[in-house]
Length: 119
Image 1 (cartoon, rainbow, N blue to C red):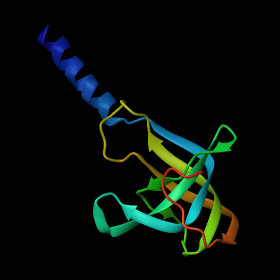
Image 2: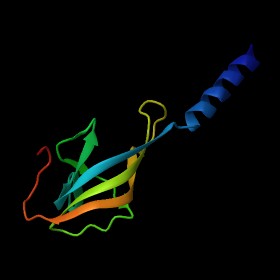
Image 3: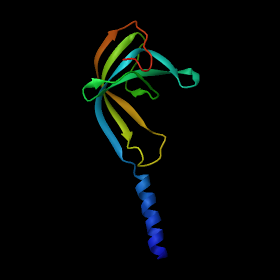
Image 4: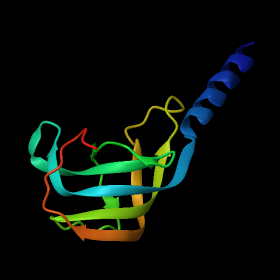
């Protein structure tokens, strides 16, 4: 009985350490301006719209950099990216998701100022 209990605990620990990674090929639009990230007034983050079911979402704050992407203010970007993440509830982790640039589809000068929640 003790062996079964110990084996159950070991199995649970092994399964919890094997997070299920999700990899998604998607497109995002990066706003031409950055916004303050959370409560740290010295940290700026990109605003992005992400493609879901053929439509772009409203702008949301992206708190992680896009690997391989060189942002320049005043340019609105349409990017093809690979999004890496982990299924919620599979394992507790601080890593939610991150992006890697595949291709810059379009880079257009844009002088508008965008905010979180805008379409």
